[in-house]
Image (cartoon, rainbow, N blue to C red; front, side):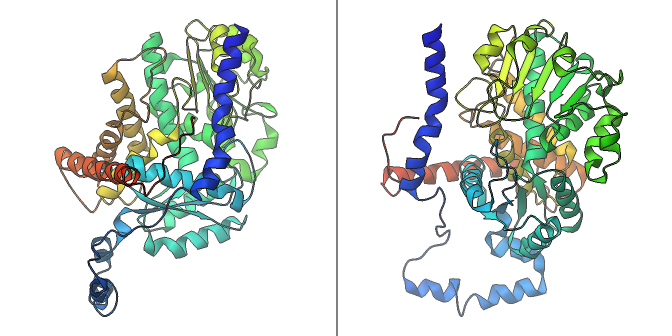
Length: 449
């Protein structure tokens, strides 16, 4: 058994060991390449001066033409201030660039979306907001990323209200959608009803607050749930939260959950609980195996902090959890935003939706869950992997159709038409990457991960 644990730990550490040398070798993960033909330099007469003046004048007369004449239709900015990066905390905007580049790579490869990282050197939320608003003419959408709470709520709310393009915070909406997808199927495997389960949330950051919100909108009973921050259980008698206006979102959780107003430590609250959703701080050892042992039969544990989960999956399994999920790709049941945002934004862009609503997120979650169910659910397969490539056009189609149903799009297509558009764009992106590797423009390095 000890050798098995050592092997699992070695595998878990491998990506962290090889990442610095590979990042240095490739000098970043994305680049800009032409979309248009360049047969010879005379083509620049069309793409630049004097020819470019004609589309410029037409856009001046009809601003919607910018989506037809430029790459705005498919461009998303991944914007962060580096104040809450993965499980690393406030590491600053420069140190956050590799994460935002990685996000941009996933957008392109999985969703066919041209994304670019932008890390802002400010911690002032109003300055952040104004900067994004100034950038928006170039962009088809904005992905906010790794911004500390409570300002992430304020930034998202204002930008969604004041921008003319869809703005999304993946740490809130993306995490919530993918977690909901995993939970829908986990409950099917253990034979429990979404409306009757008790859920303990470990961590009261932006991610878990939005996860809880989406679960409640889907049928989970908030009164049967309890959320914990670093000071203990959230409930309506928490004066420290009630009296702090910056903690408004956390206060809403206090008012809607924990109907028993328990102040018990999390170890006691987990006794008999059906589900633990941990999005707190990087482990291991944050969640104790003894706590999992006290959970209800058929216990579900989502330990999703990165880069190391709050408890190692094998420890949770040994303690009695029937289903364990993490945020990592090297363990079964990766509950990771990468299953959501590429397809969600693909569908949003393809129908030119003005926003990404909660209903669109729920539709995405249900489609992610359905994709896995179609392949056959099991204790170690409750959610698709990134290799299940059909999930991305399926999610794009589901999200786009929901946006059309809600009347917030500038394009209307049938389900088959939308799937065809999304699938073709995603396939094109993957095939281009494959071709660049085959031709040696992207170097192949024999470095096991």
